Amino acid sequence: MTTHTQRIFLIDDHPVFRHGLRQLLEAESGLAVCGEAEDAPGALESLRAHDLPDLALVDVSLPGSGGIDLVRRLRVLHPTLRCLVVSMHDEHLYAERAVRAGAVGYITKALKPKAMIAEIRKALRGELAFSEGTATALLRSAYGGERRQSRYANLSDRELEVFELIGRGMKAGAISQALCISTKTVERHQAGIKQKLGVAHSSELRRIAAIWLSESSTPRPQHDPAHATDAVLP
Image 1 (tube, rainbow, N blue to C red):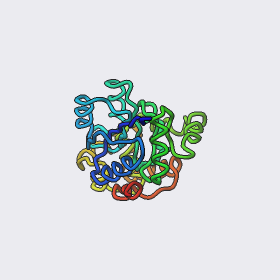
Image 2 (image 1 turned 90 degrees about the vertical axis):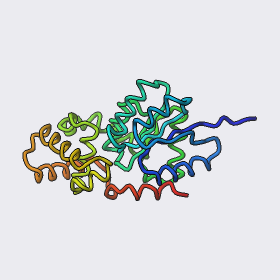
Image 3 (image 1 turned 60 degrees about the horizontal axis):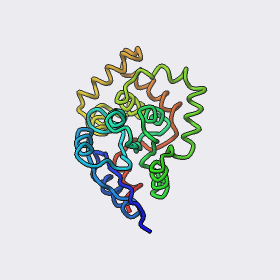
Image 4 (image 1 turned 45 degrees about the vertical axis):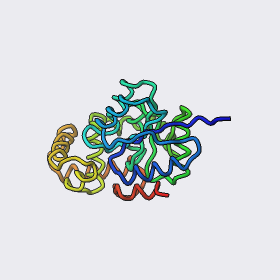
């Protein structure tokens, strides 16, 4: 009896993480990595030129437009392609946006390898894939958190990422490195966030971001791309 090998495409701008994830996946029976890309344009080009994989693993913090926007575009261009968002960002902050964009789930890079493989296999079966507790948190947000979250609903996906990192106490230079965008782009996003939230001063923006983060997320380490590799390196 021949077992069908399920093909997975990796979209992440950190080569070390992609390398570790490839090793993790290809050590599993019935799974194979069929390609990689470090940004949205590269992913769109590769997926257009080759047979579609069974699953695309998409990082939230891609250079340029970002991972959630890429998921939206992929759902339009390739409606049958399943996308699972994988990120260092807290699931409670981005999972709902990812699912609304068309993803089949959202998991963090901090998951242990066995747990990550289990969620990836769920996504390949067409099931929603989340870390433990996230589905409950999403339901709680849907039924009881509209009023608290509505103030931030107008923030774009990238603005929300910047807002989160401001809440973690990061300066513009550190945010630009974490998100692989220029400092000027970070500053432009900060100005847009201020305008949408009706905030005049950066100190007030930092205070609001810290409060929002503490109310919206589960405790986790500060955003550190290097830390992400620990979860998947063999």
